[in-house]
Length: 170
Image 1 (spheres, rainbow, N blue to C red):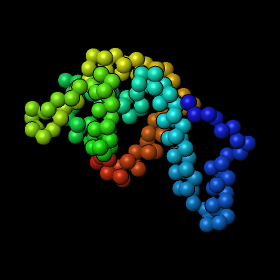
Image 2: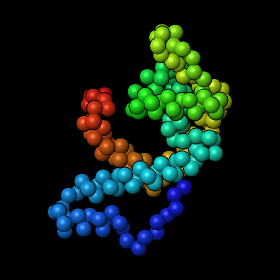
Image 3: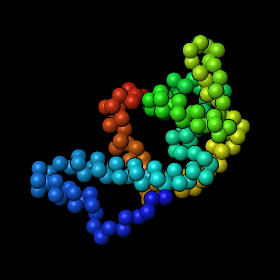
Protein backbone atom coordinates (compact mmCIF):
# COMPACT_ATOMS: atom_id res chain seq x y z
CA UNK A 1 0.00 0.00 0.00
CA UNK A 2 1.17 3.53 -0.65
CA UNK A 3 3.02 5.26 2.14
CA UNK A 4 0.85 7.95 3.75
CA UNK A 5 2.04 11.45 2.90
CA UNK A 6 1.17 12.78 6.38
CA UNK A 7 1.44 16.39 5.24
CA UNK A 8 0.47 19.14 7.71
CA UNK A 9 -1.84 20.65 5.04
CA UNK A 10 -4.07 19.52 2.17
CA UNK A 11 -1.91 19.95 -0.96
CA UNK A 12 -4.92 19.95 -3.28
CA UNK A 13 -6.66 22.67 -1.26
CA UNK A 14 -3.39 24.63 -1.30
CA UNK A 15 -3.11 24.20 -5.07
CA UNK A 16 -6.71 25.36 -5.42
CA UNK A 17 -5.98 28.50 -3.40
CA UNK A 18 -2.86 29.25 -5.45
CA UNK A 19 -4.70 28.54 -8.70
CA UNK A 20 -7.52 30.89 -7.67
CA UNK A 21 -5.07 33.72 -6.93
CA UNK A 22 -3.29 33.23 -10.26
CA UNK A 23 -6.06 32.34 -12.73
CA UNK A 24 -9.34 32.69 -10.85
CA UNK A 25 -11.64 30.16 -9.23
CA UNK A 26 -11.89 26.89 -11.21
CA UNK A 27 -13.55 24.23 -9.01
CA UNK A 28 -13.05 21.59 -11.72
CA UNK A 29 -9.25 21.78 -11.21
CA UNK A 30 -9.53 20.82 -7.53
CA UNK A 31 -12.12 18.17 -8.39
CA UNK A 32 -10.02 16.46 -11.06
CA UNK A 33 -6.90 16.62 -8.92
CA UNK A 34 -8.85 14.98 -6.07
CA UNK A 35 -10.21 12.30 -8.41
CA UNK A 36 -6.76 11.54 -9.80
CA UNK A 37 -5.25 11.32 -6.30
CA UNK A 38 -8.12 9.10 -5.16
CA UNK A 39 -7.45 6.83 -8.15
CA UNK A 40 -3.77 6.57 -7.14
CA UNK A 41 -4.70 5.72 -3.55
CA UNK A 42 -7.35 3.16 -4.49
CA UNK A 43 -5.25 1.49 -7.16
CA UNK A 44 -2.36 1.20 -4.73
CA UNK A 45 -4.59 -0.36 -2.08
CA UNK A 46 -6.31 -2.87 -4.35
CA UNK A 47 -3.08 -3.78 -6.14
CA UNK A 48 -1.50 -4.52 -2.75
CA UNK A 49 -4.39 -6.90 -1.97
CA UNK A 50 -4.25 -8.78 -5.29
CA UNK A 51 -0.44 -8.82 -5.60
CA UNK A 52 -0.04 -11.99 -3.47
CA UNK A 53 -2.19 -13.75 -6.10
CA UNK A 54 0.15 -12.64 -8.88
CA UNK A 55 -2.44 -10.13 -10.10
CA UNK A 56 -2.84 -6.47 -10.76
CA UNK A 57 -6.28 -4.91 -10.54
CA UNK A 58 -6.48 -4.96 -14.35
CA UNK A 59 -5.80 -8.72 -14.42
CA UNK A 60 -8.28 -9.24 -11.60
CA UNK A 61 -10.95 -7.35 -13.57
CA UNK A 62 -10.33 -9.59 -16.59
CA UNK A 63 -10.72 -12.71 -14.44
CA UNK A 64 -13.96 -11.40 -12.93
CA UNK A 65 -15.30 -10.58 -16.37
CA UNK A 66 -14.59 -14.14 -17.52
CA UNK A 67 -16.40 -15.55 -14.48
CA UNK A 68 -19.43 -13.43 -15.43
CA UNK A 69 -19.71 -15.07 -18.85
CA UNK A 70 -21.87 -18.19 -19.16
CA UNK A 71 -19.13 -20.41 -20.57
CA UNK A 72 -16.25 -18.75 -18.72
CA UNK A 73 -14.81 -17.47 -21.97
CA UNK A 74 -15.05 -14.38 -24.13
CA UNK A 75 -13.54 -13.07 -27.36
CA UNK A 76 -10.56 -10.82 -26.72
CA UNK A 77 -12.42 -7.98 -28.46
CA UNK A 78 -15.35 -8.33 -26.01
CA UNK A 79 -12.96 -8.24 -23.06
CA UNK A 80 -11.49 -4.96 -24.30
CA UNK A 81 -14.93 -3.51 -24.92
CA UNK A 82 -16.29 -4.48 -21.50
CA UNK A 83 -13.17 -3.38 -19.62
CA UNK A 84 -13.00 -0.22 -21.76
CA UNK A 85 -9.33 -0.69 -22.64
CA UNK A 86 -7.25 -0.71 -25.82
CA UNK A 87 -6.79 -4.07 -27.60
CA UNK A 88 -3.05 -3.97 -26.85
CA UNK A 89 -3.81 -3.72 -23.13
CA UNK A 90 -6.18 -6.70 -23.36
CA UNK A 91 -3.55 -8.79 -25.12
CA UNK A 92 -0.93 -7.90 -22.50
CA UNK A 93 -3.32 -8.59 -19.61
CA UNK A 94 -4.57 -11.91 -20.99
CA UNK A 95 -1.07 -13.06 -21.97
CA UNK A 96 0.11 -12.52 -18.40
CA UNK A 97 -2.90 -14.45 -17.09
CA UNK A 98 -2.10 -17.26 -19.55
CA UNK A 99 1.53 -17.31 -18.35
CA UNK A 100 0.22 -17.68 -14.77
CA UNK A 101 -2.07 -20.56 -15.73
CA UNK A 102 -5.19 -18.57 -14.84
CA UNK A 103 -6.51 -18.21 -18.39
CA UNK A 104 -6.21 -20.21 -21.60
CA UNK A 105 -6.46 -18.89 -25.16
CA UNK A 106 -7.76 -20.64 -28.27
CA UNK A 107 -8.94 -19.65 -31.74
CA UNK A 108 -12.53 -18.45 -31.85
CA UNK A 109 -14.50 -21.00 -33.90
CA UNK A 110 -17.06 -18.30 -34.78
CA UNK A 111 -14.44 -15.80 -35.99
CA UNK A 112 -11.45 -17.10 -37.92
CA UNK A 113 -9.36 -14.08 -36.97
CA UNK A 114 -10.42 -13.86 -33.32
CA UNK A 115 -9.20 -15.44 -30.13
CA UNK A 116 -11.18 -16.64 -27.13
CA UNK A 117 -9.84 -16.28 -23.59
CA UNK A 118 -11.20 -18.74 -21.05
CA UNK A 119 -10.72 -18.88 -17.32
CA UNK A 120 -9.11 -22.01 -15.91
CA UNK A 121 -10.06 -23.79 -12.70
CA UNK A 122 -6.98 -22.26 -11.09
CA UNK A 123 -8.12 -18.86 -12.38
CA UNK A 124 -11.52 -19.30 -10.75
CA UNK A 125 -9.89 -20.23 -7.43
CA UNK A 126 -7.57 -17.23 -7.53
CA UNK A 127 -10.41 -14.92 -8.56
CA UNK A 128 -12.62 -16.14 -5.72
CA UNK A 129 -9.85 -15.75 -3.12
CA UNK A 130 -8.86 -12.27 -4.36
CA UNK A 131 -12.53 -11.23 -4.43
CA UNK A 132 -12.97 -12.30 -0.84
CA UNK A 133 -9.97 -10.22 0.21
CA UNK A 134 -11.09 -7.18 -1.81
CA UNK A 135 -14.59 -7.35 -0.37
CA UNK A 136 -13.12 -7.59 3.14
CA UNK A 137 -11.40 -4.24 2.57
CA UNK A 138 -14.41 -2.72 0.77
CA UNK A 139 -12.31 -2.25 -2.38
CA UNK A 140 -10.51 0.54 -0.54
CA UNK A 141 -13.71 2.51 -0.02
CA UNK A 142 -14.35 1.57 3.62
CA UNK A 143 -14.27 5.26 4.51
CA UNK A 144 -17.68 5.55 2.84
CA UNK A 145 -20.95 3.81 3.67
CA UNK A 146 -23.15 2.12 1.05
CA UNK A 147 -25.21 5.26 0.44
CA UNK A 148 -22.11 7.39 -0.10
CA UNK A 149 -20.69 4.80 -2.52
CA UNK A 150 -23.97 5.03 -4.42
CA UNK A 151 -23.63 8.80 -4.50
CA UNK A 152 -20.08 8.56 -5.86
CA UNK A 153 -21.31 6.19 -8.57
CA UNK A 154 -24.18 8.55 -9.43
CA UNK A 155 -21.93 11.63 -9.51
CA UNK A 156 -19.48 10.00 -11.93
CA UNK A 157 -22.11 8.39 -14.19
CA UNK A 158 -22.86 11.54 -16.27
CA UNK A 159 -19.14 11.91 -16.99
CA UNK A 160 -19.05 8.33 -18.29
CA UNK A 161 -22.16 8.93 -20.39
CA UNK A 162 -20.66 12.11 -21.85
CA UNK A 163 -17.51 10.15 -22.73
CA UNK A 164 -19.67 7.72 -24.71
CA UNK A 165 -19.12 4.69 -22.46
CA UNK A 166 -22.80 3.80 -22.83
CA UNK A 167 -26.12 5.33 -23.77
CA UNK A 168 -27.94 7.40 -21.17
CA UNK A 169 -31.00 5.14 -20.88
CA UNK A 170 -28.88 2.05 -20.25
